[in-house]
Structures are given as structure tokens and as C-alpha cells.
Length: 361
Length: 265
Image 1 (spheres, each protein chain N blue to C red):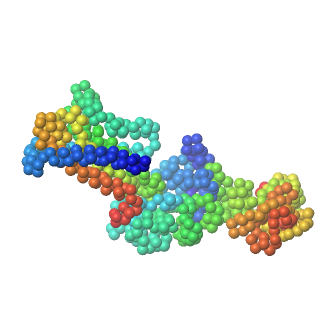
Image 2: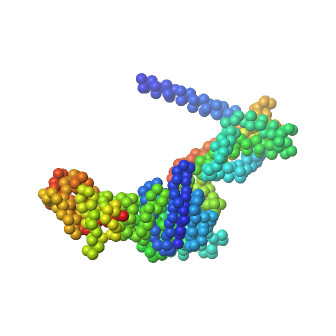
Image 3: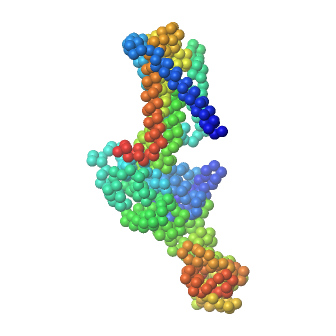
């Protein structure tokens, strides 16, 4: 288990970590998610002892390690740029930590340990190879094997996959998840990539401006964020400010009025008039052509609007709809756009379930 | 227009290359093989060659001992006054050797703060003079080499359980080795060719403080040109060797580190 209490770190005038608290449980894959410059890498560097914190405490398995030098912390680190030793071959790279840790070299070397580590990352047989001649994905595997071979208490991974091409990234991502589960190593994984965070994390912490905004399971962070920043960060496009208009606990529904339209959502304890934020993911919205001008209130939300624009959004099409002064985005397939014959200026009906509306109090 | 420019360029460059080649040839043809063979058997010449080799090798070893830590600190640590230290290293490079010699003479002379060390007009004096003038070349070269190592690579070593010293020995120095090697070659060559500071500090005492360069000067001034030429030719052969080694190291350094890693297997 790793715990950070109130870690502060500034570089000159630049305050990078502002009283950061964090706790990664034993054996879990803890993902630190944030945009670049939010302090993710500095956090890892402080945990590893490579950067000295200005304030705060660091605990590893309950003992305070602030004053333990990096080589005695037993914390592995895998770098974004691999940081392999260019003057050593793959075997020697993996063996480095085993030799460095032991004052006297073992009789017969560390063959078994190195072999096991290389097998774990699927690089058995690469021992004699020059690491600089390997592909990015292979180099990162060597870096992983090198870190695992020393049997650290925990491992820190910094944007491990961001230098790789899409295919290698996806493959290695699956393998890292598998590997981490197999050896049950407490891991802190830093990334700016939502998909990576979602796929890998047992829990995700969203970092913003040197502080953790919110911690939770991928399910919670991606579908039920508690903070507006997190909702925006994970790509919830439609966030509307409104007030609780009517509560119906018996039927489990809540009416929210944004001023421009009303939304029906799953019941959330609040009182009439409470300011809330309602979020709807663009992909949860169904579009239909309609000339109706008014919204229908039901357990399903039906809101009338007029198409402002249609643009490509990854594999889907994003349709921006004007709904009484607010704008709502809906992601639908290219085929749906064609079948419905949608174009700018068309009147449409946006439909989504009450359960699709997430309320932030 | 452009062809006359080309002619002008070739002419000027030709004069320059010719100038160097002719002067070197003059030196090479100033002696006969028999004369050269005779000269290098003279005890004074042999003593000068041995003294030069002895002092220049001592200088390289001392420069490694003190210069590598200095280069490492300048390259990897952050501290106040670093710029001042960095500039200090450059001073012996830009200062005329005679001025360096004078400074050492004053420091170790009768009133100087190191006057209790008896180094003036001794071999120790030669080593100090050469070290002062030549060691900055090693520090410069090693510092650049240390700086060019990816910081993450050294950090990776630390997180793998390596102490700072272990990292220094097993990662930092091996990765900086070609830079250190070229620094060694430059320092050695500079020490071997040092004249001004050496003569200033150790004088020109035959058999005692007569290095090759001092010998060349003394013999030339006393009219014994053939001894000067013999010493010069030997120095020149050292210089050419240095040049070749240096160019070779340069090629290695310019090539990628990976091939070097592979070649080491």
C-alpha cells in the first residue's frame, strides 16, 4: 500500500503539487489520470524518491519513507521513454537491478530470475539482443521486465504506452493488465488517456492542478462523476445547470428544469430549488426527425430542437442540436445520419432515458 | 562570375594547405635517417622523451582523479555558484601558458601560499604546470559527455536499487566513456606539448627538468638543430597518433550508442 499525505512540491514559482493525498491499496492498479502538466509525473517522482517533496508524508506498507533514498525504497519505475541502458544487452538490462541490490554477486548469476522476468513480458530468447535495436513496444517490455525482476513492493508506470503506435499500444495495454493481475503487484499508472485509464484501472484518480479531484472505480468516474471538472474531463459533453423542480421518491424520479427545457432523471435526494448539474453522454441520445415544437415530459426524456451542425467525431457523427437556447450534442452512427437524411436546420427530437441523466449536486 | 569565385576560393585554400604541407615537409627533410637514429640514442634526448612521457601520463591520471568528479558535479548537480566554477575551468584554456606558469611560480615561490612545497625546478613542478594547463580539456569533454546522458536512465538505475556510486560506476561512466576518452587524449596531447608554463615553473635543466618541448627549445637556441629536429619528429609522431585516435573516437561518438552497445557484447 502506498499513501501520500499532503504532498506539496514547487519548482521555483511553479506550484506543481498542492497538498496531494492519495492511497493505493495493496495489489491494486491505481490510475492517475490527468492532462499534461497537472503533476502526474511529479507525483510518481516523489513516490520513487527521485524528486524531494517540500512538504507532506509518504508511506509504503505503513512505514514512512520520506528519508529513504530511491535505491532503498523498493519501488520500481517504468519510464515513458523506456530509459534502458544503451550500453547493456537485454539480459544485462534486466539483471542490472539484481546485481545492484546484492553486494556480492551470486554464484551462477541471476539466470533464473532474468529468464522468468523476460518470460513474463514475452521476451524469452531476446537475452543477447541490443535493446536500442528493438521496437518501442519491445523496449517497453524490457523496461517492465527490468523493473519486475527486482521484485519491488510496488511499481510506478509513467505514460508507459504513449510513445507507441496504436496497435502496439493496445496489445501491450492488455498484457500489462494481465501481468499486473497475475503477479498482484501494487501499481500506480499515470496516463492522460481515458481509454487506457478505463481499461487498466481498478480505481482511477483524476488529477487537476496538483490535487486529486476525485477517486473511484472506472464505472463511477466515467458514468457517475461527482465533480463537474471530472465530468468535463472524461468527455461528458452535455452538462446543464438547473434546479430540482419536482421530486417523486415513490416513482423514483426527479424533474430538473434548466430554464430552457425540463429533464427527467432517476431520483436523487435533494429539495425543490436545489441547484444541480445534469449530464447526458452524447452517445446515449437517440435522434428522430420531428416537426413537433414542444418537449414531452415522461420517464423518457424527449426534447425538441433544431440541428446546428453535423461533424465527424471519431467513428461516430456528432450532431449539435439547439434546444431552446442551450446546445446538446448527440453521437450517432454515420448510417443513422444518412437514413434519417439529417442536415443542418432540421427539426429533430432528442430522446434519452431518465437513467441516462447523471445529476451532480 | 561564379567560376572566378571558385578559382579564387581554390587559390586561397590551396595557399593555406600548401603553407602547412611545405612547413611540415621542411621539418621532415631537415634530417637524414642516420642523423635521426644517432640523435635518439643520445642519453639527453632519451631522458627528455622519458620525462615527457612520465609527466604527461601522471597528468592524465591526476586529471582523471580530480577532473572526473569535477565534471560530474558540474554536469549533474544544481547549486549556487556553479557558473563561477564552470568559468574557472575555462580560464587555463584561454590564458596564455606563460601567464599560467607565472601564476604557479608566484603561488609556489618564496612568498607564495604554497611555498613550503618544494616544486619549483623539479619534476613535480612540471606535473603541476601541465596539469593546470591541460586538465580543463578533460573536464570539458567529460562534462559534455555526462550532460548528454538521459537523466531518466540514471534515475532508472536508482529505482532498480543502485546507489549513486554504483550508478556512477556502472551507468554514468560507461555511457560517457567515449567523451572521457577523447578528453584523456586531448589532455595528454596538451600536456605533452606544454612548453610555456613548464619552462616558467621548472626551468630548463638538462636531465632534470628537460621535457621534449623544453629540449627542442634549448637545442634550437644553442644551435643544435639536429637534436631539436629529432625531438620534434618524435613529438610529431605522437601528435599524429593522437589525431588518428581522436578522429576514431569522434566517429564512435557520432555513431549511435546502440551499435556501441552491440559491439561491446
